[in-house]
Image (tube, rainbow, N blue to C red; front, side, top):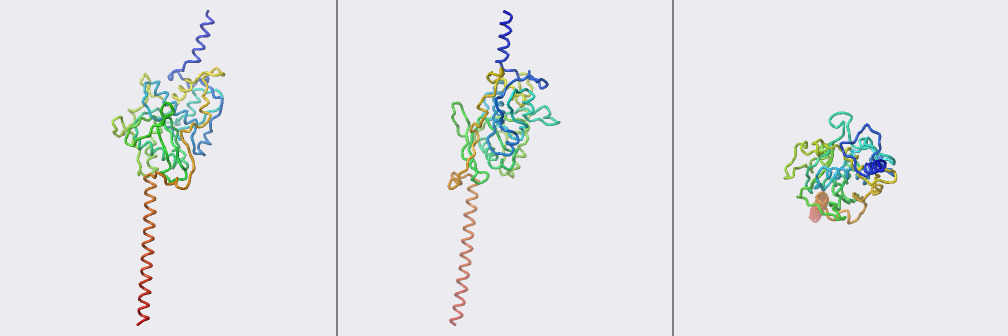
Length: 325
């Protein structure tokens, strides 16, 4: 009877998620297992695409928020700048989660970056995808991974007008169009949120992304937006990832195993190249401004040519008149 009870306890221990607060960085006990390698950090930095490690981290934000009673988050965002490593095949520990997620050598983020939840307008969300699509190839740190948001972009289009479609990924595979004036609840890590000023600087303050509260008022300080657990303690990004790992279904390894869906991109961010009319189809503000500038330049050139022709005609007329006299 005791053996049966012990066996039942062992099975339950394998099936039930490990509470976030129980995770121990000093322990080398595996909490998850991956049957495959994900794209390396170096390849993430050298390419511009969807990153499965980023997808997983973003999904962990949504999972951890739900575990703490927050079910209304629309989008989770993870910048490549806050990813320090990738998932490797084999057993995974809480220390592996810590090594993957952002942490500083010293200062407030030495133990990792806490998660924050705030609101962005639909216009700001679209701008984030545009910064990712247009500036990501040159600025590795602004490459973004998402949960709850899918978008497509055409690399043949003009900078800051490359995104051709963007929507919220809802249950059942449905995409919901984003409305510019609507507020959407976003979860990210505090380090990424602190980089907003730098991000805004990349677009020369022409476009500004502004975190807001539920009433739409700009937030000067995100300290009151921290995601906290039942004890009121901030939830660190690495804790969310480790906790998410423990929620996976137990596999042949006897541990929760990383789902195969993370072995390849999930079309959350789709890059394509299409020239011709597609370059200016459904133009945004930047493309319209560029088209306007080109038209203005052509008009100016035509006016200059007309003036030159008129001047030449007048000179010929004067020379002809002198000759006749």
